[in-house]
Image 1: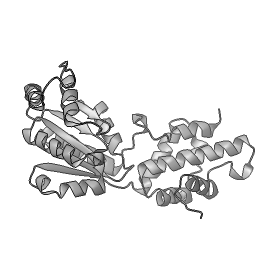
Image 2 (image 1 turned 30 degrees about the vertical axis):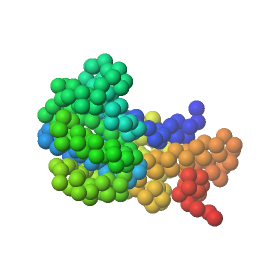
Image 3 (image 1 turned 135 degrees about the vertical axis):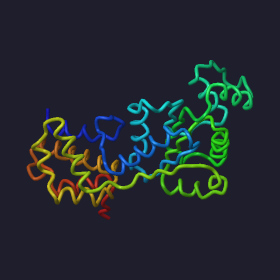
Image 4 (image 1 turned 120 degrees about the vertical axis):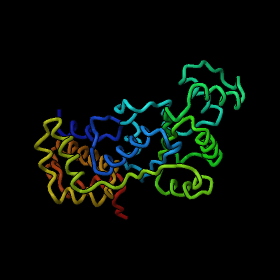
Length: 267
């Protein structure tokens, strides 16, 4: 099998924890979120970061690796109404609830018998998609102190929500995932490639190549992976077609990849 065909699969943007990068910002955010969840004192936590910063990956990591955290439910997106949210949480507690068979008040009352003292967490990813009505409902649930609600959302939208008066007056926690550092991108690339014994490909990433990736990905984890996957695809195709000019990773093939995924505008 072509080595670049193997390499490109290492940079697929997914939740495979084998692709875990213990970056400074990720480790700091993970430590702070675990500390907050294990304290059982904060009803609502905002996990903020630019798109692709690693918010979803962090929630998935804690769900699968943090035994100290009890998670009632992980919502990968907020496409639910108030009733559906409560019904799903009751299902998670082991109650067989027929849809629309109970009033909102009854659902909340039943939930209180299962969840209390902020013992369990509810993760909601892509929370920037929440409506004003949904946010207000979650705030009310937070006031009841049944769950620790973690909202992962884009940094700009999250700061806007936090500035609203009814959130300013509540006990909340804000955790921010920042950009990667240049040396962390280097370490990520090397670790992923060497995990499959692709040292010859790893050696092609010199200072110029790393600087290119850092610059055009804006030090964003998801964008970096997309650029790396695309450049490996380009080189794989070139090698199969005996196009020697493009059969390795360098400034030229990286530029082609950056153009292909829209990081460089050639118009």
